[in-house]
Length: 219
Image (cartoon, rainbow, N blue to C red; front, side, top):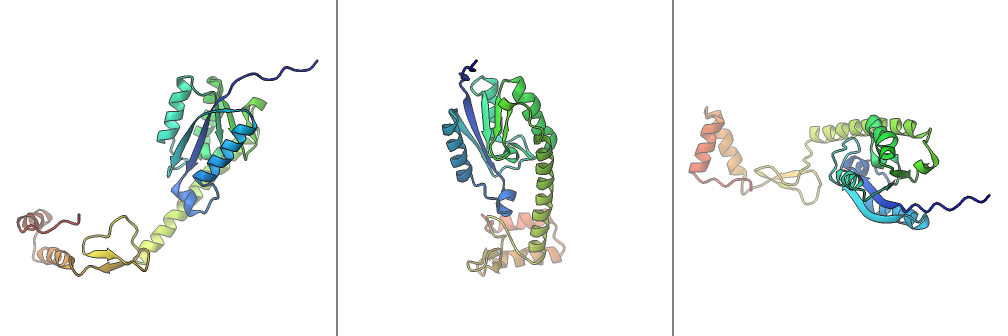
């Protein structure tokens, strides 16, 4: 006897995530790329997209991401019964917590979960491969974090500066990223602070003198 078609309407959340570590490692998973993949998959498989939930710049080891939590709230409110990600690592890179969501929380809420590139779709039952992929994703996150920290430490040790603003007394070199140049207009402030410190002034005393003399702040 021919089986009837599945008539369940899947109100779907497309979850997209990209961390700064992913960008530094050169992963080919930009938000735009993820969006195109997820939108195409949903269209081809008859999924009704309710909303996109995007955490750009958030680590997969942190589950307090704003859009992830908004998605959970919508699941609790009954708005979502299907979640789609590019792969398991987009959902998270913490083995235990990712597994709790995919194996316990989603099933308890009647939520179908799909990780496209990892061929995970809970409508087909539990994936025997998923727990191993979650472990590998967590190991990758730890190794990436170590590599990024080591690279930044090397850059700082060689005098490189990375930040939105140059420290007081310096300006950013327009021709060399991470390189600072002495600012001839504000260097005297730094020299004054050092001179006061050399002559025994403490931080509170130096601050009071700078305020009294209306020395401009870095801002």
